[in-house]
Length: 348
Ligand SMILES: Cc1ncc(COP(=O)(O)O)c(C=O)c1O
Image 1 (tube, rainbow, N blue to C red):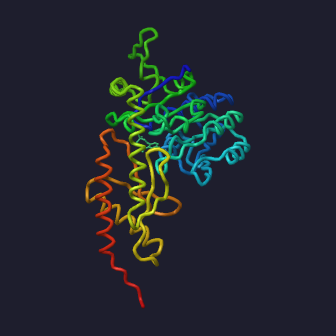
Image 2 (cartoon, helix red, strand yellow; image 1 turned 45 degrees about the horizontal axis):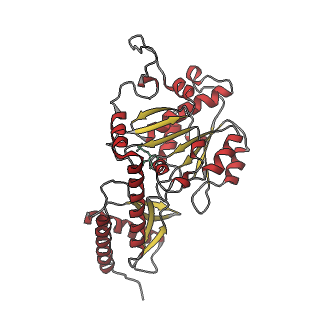
Image 3 (cartoon, rainbow, N blue to C red; image 1 turned 135 degrees about the vertical axis):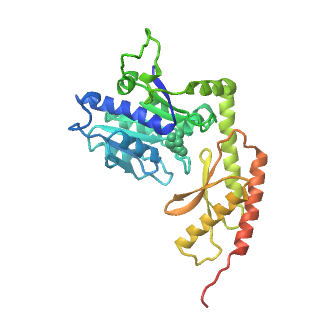
């Protein structure tokens, strides 16, 4: 494979870089030069994605002038993955299309079935981009089969500052068609000199000036090696599973989604069985806040199937089994205290 790459500020700008190359390629194929003529009067592009796609996709689409209304968010199956028949039906509507798939989503770690979806998208001439902000690293681990077919895509965005644990400001864009990548990003200015065939980062990234991001990525990969990355990914996935099971065994906690990789969802059940949906949501926020104030671990809230839930997400190389045990002990204490404090007042 002769793909080109760029180091960006994060996955958000890696999406912008990849989707700029996609926009170039899609419009070039219908006879439109977007770098020269912009988008005024250009053929429209549809962006087909999953209802669970990350918000950075919508923003990349907006930055590139395609507008958020160009996005078609497909309803997924119960496993939160795009279904082949749904994708096929949407593609059948024609129009130049960009398909964005997930590896993986940040709530339940859902990984789209690339080996089924990408051939369908290709048969319709679509460009396929993969958001692999954290999940792409699982390809180096025993979880690799879950990403089967991901290599069939046209572009991939990931972060070194998530699962590789480099300092922040380290996204990576990878693009199969290096000529589309270069055409979308390159610049020329009289004072820039690029001797011979030496790669100049300005031709591949959205930045004019940038720090040497590749240095931290190189150092981390050199230190860990493929086995070290596999171990890091597998450890985090194991801890996420232990945390999810541990939370689920605490009275008043329900497992909403078991981890596919390193993400899981749980929900806290209000002590009052007659609590309204709003009260239930408020109760979840209260427990999340109490857990975070206790300080052993940090959790964020999310919304899943219309309900307020808590995300379990493990991605730090420093997390140990001992942290998992301490977190569960703290959670048990906090939840018990909050349930004890809850006064359920109902008219008799
Ligand atoms: C799935 C996914 N995509 C994209 C992003 C955006 O990444 P960044 O913050 O590096 O721009 C995130 C960030 O959490 C993410 O989880």
